[in-house]
Length: 577
Ligand SMILES: [Zn+2]
Image 1 (cartoon, protein in one colour):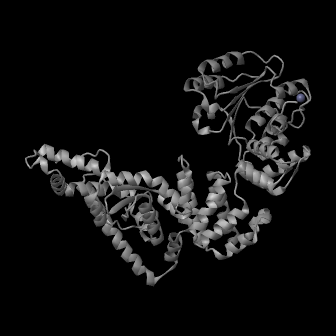
Image 2 (tube, protein in one colour):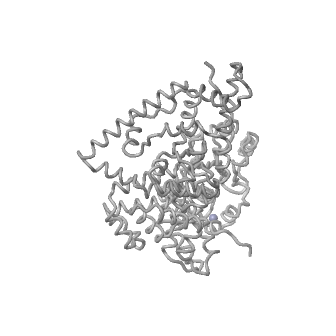
Image 3 (spheres, protein in one colour):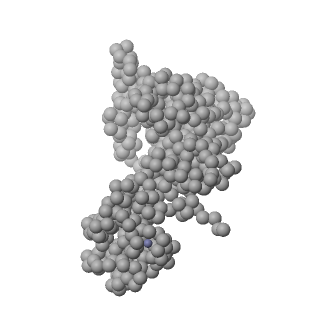
């Protein structure tokens, strides 16, 4: 026998079998019993919540001669032909592949003929939001002139894409995400009927990953069955869904609490190496943090999960403050947004992990909790920020750049409490004065090896950075994130490791490391170039004495450009006054 996917085998055939949509199925049954059948229905809701199943049951129930209490019999010829998809009076259309006007026009024409075998002609249009505007107009005409024995059932996951004129002519039912407990119950039922053993915990994990869709739940279960040796274990489920084990999360959160970035990054590495999916990983950690909060405030609400609550979890709930957990959740949330469109989620995960385990978070928490003593320090920091802001504004004015990056004031103040990094402008300029492309090229060449030579934590920090300029004595490195930049600048071990490894790879080269943020680089570079125009020319001329001093202005400008190219290895525009 050909293998059939579980969700096909277990598709509900009666309204009472549709899981988690009792309000809708009861209303439909009542309507059928009272023969108050509408000529157009709109079923909306997330994928896998039972819309098309309900549509087919409705098609059967209105046509079944033995219909009882609003349910089809599923035995008669008409019911069976509809189940098998061979009933010519029940027409299923996937709008995703038929979005043409012609298609709907055909429907209109055919709708004019009375049903041949069944009592009602039923059109089920799935993914109806995919119809073209022309097709919607044709459909609207059809709905405006309802035929007595024709029913339209429109199904969609995206009701906002359907014209209001259409929606207003339908009876609308919003299908909800199915509760995790309902999914668990149904999966258990399916497994019992199939004589397959399982652990309840495994089903919890699968149901969670299904995110409210029964079809997804059954598909994941299918995979878990093929992974298992006859019994669905928690390990199977974790493996198939790419979820974190409770033990992993316990150890991870403890390491975050103890501010051990190295351990955290090692654990992250372990998780990713064992095939955990970044998106799922963040979600699992978010749920874990949420559970910690719930356990602190209302442990009875976690009764359903009681079997997962390890001693470590309970201990963490006692020891980690709610503020700290909120801070964790913020970081996880942010990372979730960042990886959504990223092709390299690992970097964002690593940055998030460093943040979670970093002192930054606890400082923030402490700052929030502390009173008079520290408010002075905060005031000082705020003053420094204001100063920096002024400087940045001036810089931007100097280079004539619109101030597009001005952030709302409150946002800045929030950052001000712990993360602002003071740019070492003088040291940057020092390096730029003597910078050559040759040095920069050699650094870039060994960059990959340099990363590989560092410890996990150090690697995570440096992988969010790029070498920008190099002189015989200095190297400017720009970090993508200010928080990492600050951390790197204060981490003597990190600085020594980077320096030593560079000098090992480029013999005799031991540059002074100057850290800046990626954001500040274009500004610093421009400021240096415009301020240094004269000196650059002079130094260039002393290096090329043969060319003499009779250069024209144009030639001098050319030299600035070539010097700039020499420094940065790329073309930059020289501002005309
Ligand atoms: Zn029947």
